[in-house]
Length: 86
Image (cartoon, rainbow, N blue to C red; front, top):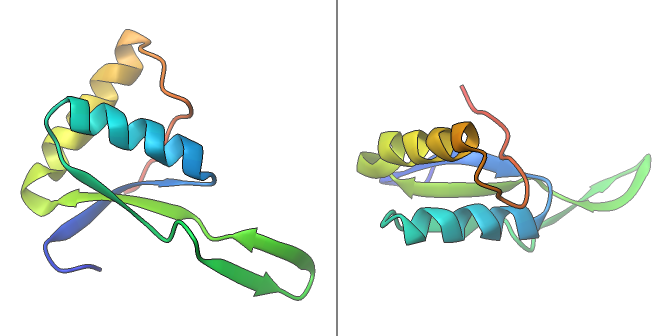
């Protein structure tokens, strides 16, 4: 894991990651997207993007998760819901 950062969500597409990052940054929580241009080779499938990670500073992780949960509960639309991480 990147030093001082915590992954709070993963996405299949970049548009969804940017939508959630924009939401967090509008809420005052800086966020960064990793692996946006990385591809993997699977012998049984064509090239496909790796899962895209959205990370925040470790001290903002809980606040970011709460903001995303509150958004989901309020029905505020985001392009796509992030996958939950345990």
